[in-house]
Image (cartoon, rainbow, N blue to C red):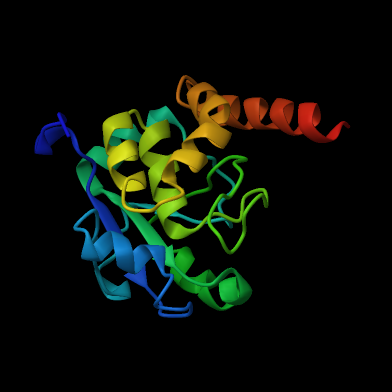
Length: 179
C-alpha cells in the first residue's frame, strides 16, 4: 500500500462475540492488523461509531473527526442487533448509506453489511480509497463488494454533507426499486 500511516484512518473493533468466529470479518480484520480490538468502555465519545440506529449518514464532512478519533465498528450479529443498541449509541454515531452486502452470509441484501464491509465502505466515503482496497484484500469476495458498490461509494464520497448523502441514497433506491 502506498498510503502513509499518517493518512490511514484508525480503525477500532468492539467485538461482542455474537457471530460465528470462523467467519467473523471483524476478527479477521484484527488478525490481519487492519483494526485494533477495543473493549466497550474504551470507545471515545468523539470517535465515529458505525450504527444503523443513527439519524445522521456518514459523509466526507466526517473526515476530520475520523482522522482525529478513529472509526469504531461494533461487531454484533444482525440477529442480535437490538441487544447491541446501547453499545451502538456510544461515540458519535453515523449510519452508512444504502449499499449491497456481498459477504457470503447476506449476499445481495441491501444494507446488511458485515463489519469488514461497513468499515471498508466508511473509509472509502471518507476518502481513503487505498485503505478501502487494503481492507477488502483480506477476503476473497472483496473485489465483488467493490464492483457491486463502486457507483454508490463513488457518489457518496463526493457529497458535501449527510443530507446530500441521503439525497443520493434516495435516488439510488428509487432507481432500483421504483417509488
